[in-house]
Length: 416
Ligand SMILES: Cc1ncc(COP(=O)(O)O)c(C=O)c1O
Picture (cartoon, rainbow, N blue to C red):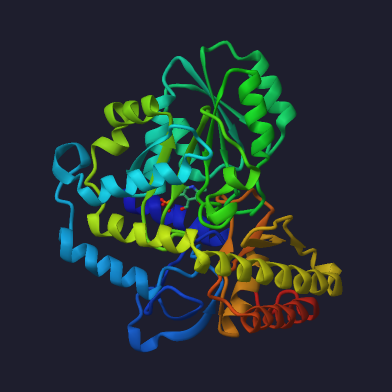
């Protein structure tokens, strides 16, 4: 019965071009990958040029981080052995938290930090622990799934506002009667690449005695002086800020952290189930993350951010020209100045067709479809990394030009 039911649902997804599939990466994360189809052996892997990771600074395969990870394993072993509150909290975790607290101090005076195994869990922990029955959560409609899930799990009332629509948010805040108010937003929206107006959100938080929870998964390491993140990009500083940053994207490893007022951090330690009831991440990762912070904040990080910025400008200029050449396709480049550069195609099958046309030319760019993005806005989520070269970007645009020509002449020829 269950199997028949699920098979029916899987077939529905197929019919709507919504079936998801994985690929197997055979090599270290980087622009030049070897990938095999899921379920196929390594011998069938192909070389591809990838534009899909969130490794924005190209640190995931950096020799210094590989060495730091090995050193961390030699010092602390392979695993943590238990949750943080039992015996899994090592000196490596404590040192990382101290360093991140210093890192965030210019934005949140007196901040303390709690480290997590993943950003997904950090967001669940944060929203369920703070969003009790005395609270209301105000959330941007395009927030990441982990913030949506955290808000749905929380006991707080939930109001979602249209993407970046601060007038709607203001009206919702005005009407709010609970004593605790939590405004929750991605800093850089993960599927659109646009940056939330954190300065205006903070002003609203101050006016309505609310707290601003910022998910800086895609800003940490990339934006602001020394890559300190989107709060630094805006030059914000307030005790009302609560920041979640992830460490598996620009930082090149894995994990996440929450930086906030010490009492908030203490409360998370006491009450956040997604923190308490899970094994601590391997200490070696925390150890290597300190080496990553040194790279991000130093000259090498600066050079990588500069290079990334020039790649973003080159890609946008070339894609803008390409879109203008093929107006009938209805493609649109999202308004984004970050490393996330979505090419919005619209229809699910059409997005898959473009991704397939790129794949046929040896390029790996994922097609993102609902429910990850709103219906009718299926897209190629192109992400750039400092590990890409200008020639890589040109190759991507050339491949998209071929796909555009083919789709313009034979709109159904390469549909899957
Ligand atoms: C905006 C945002 N928040 C949170 C997460 C979750 O972070 P993690 O991958 O560390 O679980 C992601 C992506 O994965 C994200 O894009």
